[in-house]
Length: 111
Length: 117
Image (cartoon, rainbow over all chains, first blue to last red; front, side):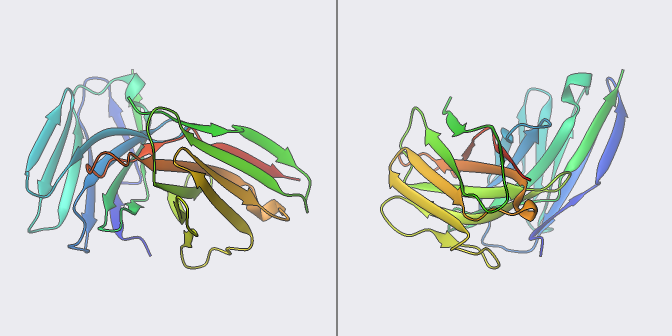
């Protein structure tokens, strides 16, 4: 059973557009919410992460928005580039340090 | 940044043989490492938590006798797939937690692609 629900499953966006990926969770014990980027045949790489005491975090073109009361968080990729084409996973870390991943979103940025 | 190295990156073996995959933290020490399995176009599924100097803890449904985990030092964890069968073919990924940091951040290896013929 997926503890972190992620949508959409796939996304096509034009170069320069905004990619938005949403995640929701139920377990209020989660206290760390990272986003990972994965290219085919590679391990996931940390993109950006947030803790529940912050509502938004921005790093370059990547922004996480966090809504604690709704138990939802999202990733916005501004000015999307073809090099951003990858699979993105949201995740949540519980008190045991275990990372629970969302199902993933395949993002394709068209030239 | 912190680097986690996995070896081998690809391995092909015959059904019935055992395969060992190594996960090393190169520039930090990790008391805890995690092993994941990822099937094509699917998410990462946690298999087990590897604890230095103690037994690994396995997720529900993961056979501990099938997937042997050893975490003998603060920089090395190994996953041995015993008596491998074609259904064990998958992408195995490890991650490690820096013991000196309490950020929750995990550093991932590049993964090991196992193909069982």
